[in-house]
Length: 307
Image (cartoon, rainbow, N blue to C red):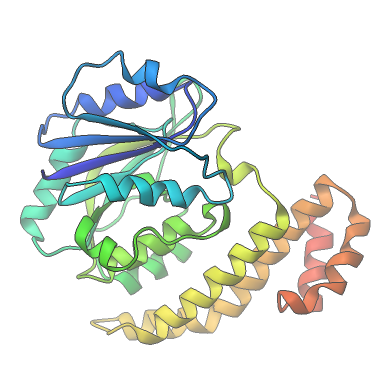
């Protein structure tokens, strides 16, 4: 099997549309792994509307929940037999050319650990509202990280295609609370094997809606994810073998890592203050050492809460 399309599923609303887009591929050598995360909705009935033998449906006995959503990504990965895997949301879509474009890149870069698909952003009515930034055909893991900060405004777990064996050898999708940062770190892990190859045409559609996990969750859990993400990036940057301009990219990223971390924390705290109470800034000041927060970050958070 060349490709495994992983669908960690919980919501019924767009699942039919999602599966339908996978089956519409112009490249036919793939399987669809659907893992129902103990959903209260009848996902099996939706899957049952399709009779394609490439669909494999499983149901978890216990719900992983939003906090541990990456657990279900890795359960899906455990069922996969494909050489390459895509892990997409149950409300996202593949364009018909997706797997065909990935297969072309694999032929050009046969030992690649990661592929990335140019992505269209769609709304709740499946209308295209935006196109993500264009990327060069090939880049290293360090280059991916640098451009993620400076040029790549948006990327998602579903617009990446991973070499399954390499991902599993590195303990699967990287597990952070609420999957905050898990997509980025998983991509860097994938790209650490010979870089990343990017499609030059759109192949994936990411749906923006109010129920995405990034729009939910506890602030403390998000702050914990930011700490873990920052620590991982620092270790990754200092341990990677460098090629080309990677040394320049790495030095800049390491230099800016503390500032970027403080800014992310500030914006996250600002959201907490805006949604609950600005008096909570006192609580964050008391907990500042837990997250290595600077006083200037708390001032920034307080000011941002008024915007």
